[in-house]
Image (cartoon, rainbow, N blue to C red; front, side, top):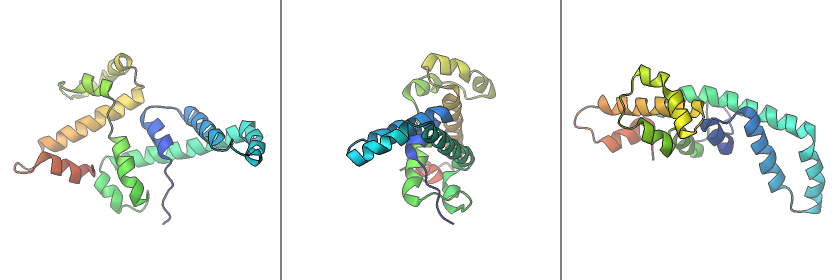
Length: 173
């Protein structure tokens, strides 16, 4: 099974709540900056400015976003993801993807730490989103991850060192 090529810039944008259209714009800007050095590449700049390229960038972003939604389900248990072939990602990207998915925005973390992580709080995450100015989808992901990690620590066997347990359970490096 060939590994899926995860675009980390797009994955990071997705985890931060950017839309596929925002991600397509990111692709356009990145490719335009990359290819404006030589005269030959300047001819390519016309292509990068064309509606066709914008359309291809949007299709590419939507394809990546579809994969990210499938990947998100597996990232709830990152250690299992290493063994699964249906969503195979290159081993060297695994740690970067897990780290990006479980990353916390400091403003969101400040608003979540110290609160009881209940279903009622999840309903109020839109307040966290507006107060932190972080998109709701990103706040929901961070809330779910925070709750998942907290629950894992609470249910860990008593003599287990917390850091080692989390590194093993969630593939944190």
